[in-house]
Structure formats: C-alpha cells, structure tokens
Length: 523
Image (cartoon, rainbow, N blue to C red; front, side, top):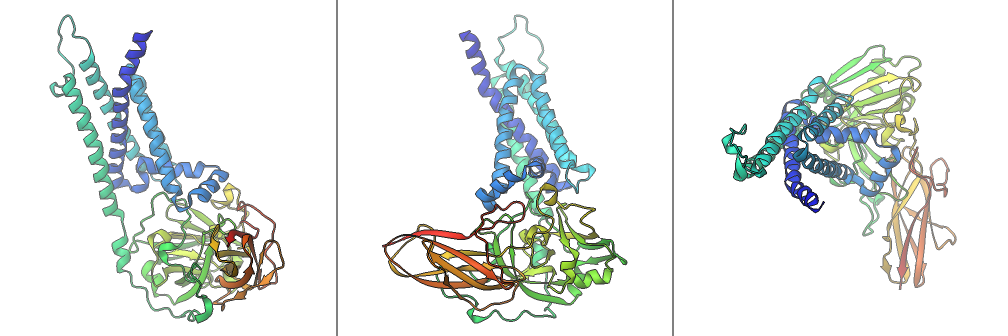
C-alpha cells in the first residue's frame, strides 16, 4: 500500500507540470490564432464571455457590488485558475492513462469552440482558436507523457528501438522537451497578444478623429455649480474616473473608417450612415448625468460629462417611425442589446448619438466611435456603447439583453442623493461640520436636498446653481454637532415634488432606493 502511495505521489509533480505546460500551449496557440479571427475568439475570452451571459443575475450584481470595474479581471483570473487546476488534474491522469488525459484536453477545446460560437455576433471561423489550441495541447501532452514514461521506465531486458525522437529520449530529453514546450507556450501567447493589440487596437485612429464644432453649444457651467469643498465630487467627471459597467471582457475595437450605423425595422425609409456622415450632421453639445442600475444607494456608478453628438430624434424622423413602434433597440458591435422607449426619444429631450465626451472623441472604454444617450433612464435602457444598429420594434416583440435576465423593460432614473463629505468613519472636530454631496433625478432635476443627524429634524441644504435638469446638483449643509458618534442621512426632492423614498430596495430589477447615510465621529 505504501509503495502504491509513493508511486502515485511520484507521478503527481511531473504530471502536474505536463498539464500546466500543455494548458499554457493551448492558451498561447489560441491567442495566436485569434490574430485572424479577433480577440474575442481567444479561448479564455470566449469562455469568459459565455460565462458572463450564463451567470445568474444575483451573482452578476454581487460581482459588480464587490469588485466594481475590476469584475472582469476577477472573472478572467478565476477562469485561468480553474483552467490551471483542471490542467493539473488532466496531466496527473494522463501519466497513468494517457487516453483519458488527452480526452480532457479535447473536451475543453470543444467547450472553447462552443463558447466562441455561442456569441450573438459569432462567425464560423471563431471556433478555430480553441480547436487549434486544443490540438496543439493534445499533441504536446502525448509527446510529453510518452517521453516521461520512457525516461522513468526500468531498462527493458531486450532493448528495442524507441518510437520517440532521439532528442526526446531519456531524462534530459524529457526536461528539454518540457522546457521547449513551455517556451513555445509563452512565445505563442506573447506574440499572439502583441499581434492582436497591433492589428485591432484603434487608439491611433481615434487620436486622428477631429470632432467638428457643435452647431448647438451647451451653456457654460454656472460658476456656482460646484461648491469649494474638499472631497466633493467634481461637477464634470473626468473621463479617466467615469464609471464603466458592461459585459465586454475585451474592449471592442471599432474602426471609425469602417463603422456604419443602420436604422431599420419599423421604419418607412431605413437609413445607413458612415462615421464621416454622422460627423457632418449638425452636432449638439449637452451635459448629462449617467447612472447605472447596479448603483447601490450612495454608490459610485454615476457621473456627469459634456457630450457631443447628433440628434437621435432627427434621425428617427428621417427614417420615419411607423405606427405601433414603441421600442428602439440599440445593438453594440459585440451583440449587446438595449431597448429604449421610442416616445422618450421623440418627446423633446436631448437624445444623442454621442461621438465625444468632455472635449475629446469618445474613449474606447465608453463606446468609441459612437454611443447612444437618452436622458432620464438608467444606462441599461438608454446608453448603448459601440453602437452599430438601431431597430424600431415593439416591447412585445423583443426583450433586450438585461430584460431577458429579469430587469424591468423601462427604468427611469430614481431620485437619489449621496453624501460625499464627510467620509464614512471620519474623525472631525466637534462644532460646525460641513456636509456636502450630490443629488440627481435625470431629466426631472432637483429642487431640494435635506440632511439630518442622528434621526433628528431635517435641515434644508444649500443647493448649488443648477446646470440643466439632465445633470446632478451639488449641495452643502453646515451642522453644529457635539462630540460623539453621529449618523448623517440625506434625501432629495425632484422638480416634480416627489421626495426620495426611505424604503430600501435592491438594485434589481429597476434600481436601488433608500436614504444614503454616513457614520463618523466628532471629538
């Protein structure tokens, strides 16, 4: 029994090494093959993208809540760790039963190919990176296992010719083969990643885009829109700090010279525009606050930017909206779909096909070269990034991506407010304490903000000057507080007279509600 255990343990380390090396080769060859089929077809990315689509909604919300914009990094890290563990198991098994280990490699190649083909924008060639990676890994596993067996087997009583190449025989041959295969895995992965970045990265083309002067300029932001309080959010959120929540594991790289936008479906005169034609239209500059349905009470997934784009309403009128069309479905180049009420596009609000953000072409992470924006709704029903298609249809006929996963079909932004100053668990001098923050009710505007401490009476905060009803409003309040532990709460009233509810609700299915609170100490 002890000899069997020792024999099994002796197989474990080389078997694990064989598994990891062959898995690395599969990933590397897959990355290299993705140079021709696109970065989204690389095995790990394909599997990760399918995992996002198949993940239950509560788990998606958990990932966004706890990992924020790093959720995709966490997912990919988990995929690579899982692949590594399975590779270790497959390698150990292969040393004893080569056919079973090779079958596991083939199975994961098939899974990667299935994942690549399951994407809504997939093409037949998308399966090749996974299949070629699995083929290379399977061949390497067979060669490595046979070399290891030959190197560790007792000398035969009657010598016979080896089926292995001379360079793969013996212990040195096995070690050289293992090191060479590991090097090939690293080289193919590195070359593939660099080649993909060079072939598909549109950063240089983005840098050459020149946004024309808008025909309609936004008014200057009022001087009093941003109180001078340390720690208060900037009125205009810098592009580098603007939140990003989407399902794209790799950022879509859309060539503006090849980009087109189709407007079709229930349209009298379907249209198709190039990027140059879009830029040639009268452009509008407009300030708008954008928020995510996954933003918890007091959360960070909200920001304000100065956008430039073409009028979405004008384009729909040119296409001719047919009677009965009540949903406009925006499609991203990666297959994401977002459904917006048609009436909200045509009711006079400033809906845009945005091409610029805070004075520069849209960042790639925020939808370059074109995204949709319709004020008054959470992003998941109004703000398609990397937009390539607009379809006029009905809510009865089609459910967009997030609606298929249980979110509400229509989700107006809820009246919300947040305390930015003081920070949670801060230690401040007793006496006059400055409280400051932001409030928003996009497309309705904010008329009042109230603050209270320790469950006492509400104090009316001082509102900063308003920019537009489509942007957040900043506020300040001064409270006299004795030494001790304190809890601050805030609530807002929008321009319709509706007061922010105290009722706590989760972000699913149509946005969180409740009052934001901060606990801190004065001494």
